Image 1 (cartoon, helix red, strand yellow):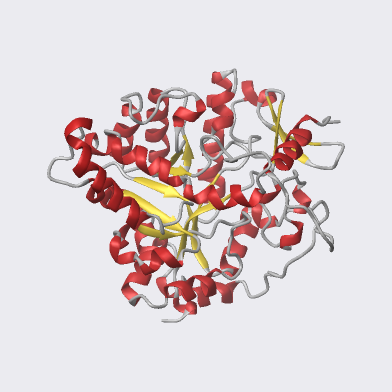
Image 2 (spheres, one colour):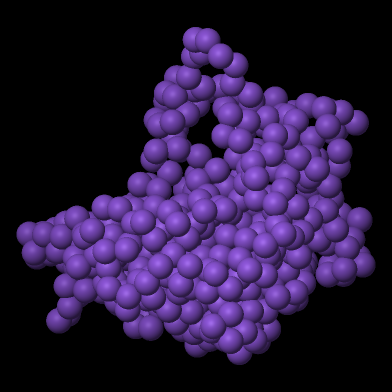
Length: 436
């Protein structure tokens, strides 16, 4: 097998919502109150909802920009690659990168719809959330049904309403929802309670997988304000262990025997030790902690019901035998700063070329299609789904790095590392600066 022969399905990418998202999908009574895009004095575009400014943070959409221009500051749409927010351009960018299909998380709403959770008017919030889902399923994914795996938000403030939305979007063909990786950190009941049972029941009934994306609770995690921002970036995927621990020790995997979760953007290198550790804890402590897993060990439950994914993870791929390879998937993370676009096939193949072809096929596309119940081959023959075939369709796409104004350019000479405190100050200033 060569890199050109790969078939790639990414289960973690992101969409920067277009400015006209709500114009066609929200009821007229809520149209004037729906989120809208405003151009600020400083030239940045921000979403405004219930008086709050919600910028597109720079690092969320840097595909195609030189790394020296990466930054936190909000950006304008014209500073972004069109594939960030335009579906036709996104499909062409996917083809230029040899990626067959993609699951896209939201941006300004929060990775799990936290913006609507925090809003005061919950009737408005529900209308906006449903409008987002209808836009995402009908317009974004509907524009290329062989290329996009639908992913819906649910109203986190009401589990019964959330269950209703799971069933509603399932009827539209969407069998994946995004929820908070640690709801207790955003003021909601934790996954150790029975509060969420209506949602899990609806997911089981419909065969819906629950995606828990890193950062969908407390957002950016800072060890200290004077720590370099590199500390935060390093810890982003490693924090997924907290969510994984909650999953395995909570009752829901045992209470709902077909319920599946996907840990999005968390990598896989930590999984072998995690599985070893939870079994050790169970063996040494279950008699006084009152944990009961029946005939299975905790590691077996995790291996069966939790889907993991990685961008680049040589360690995990070397230790693949210590985990369930049937639940390992890949992600591109377009257009975030960690993305491997536009050289994903070459970079990925270099990491997994030591594996058997059958295992490579599982990781690169078969596992994702099975867990997310998505079949692109209804629309596209498999021989036209390879990296080589897709790139041939997009040979005219310019994937060269292009400078854009507004980036955090690094000048030559001695420079102090960017700290977490600097980032917080920059974001606060951006969100508090006047709109007009």
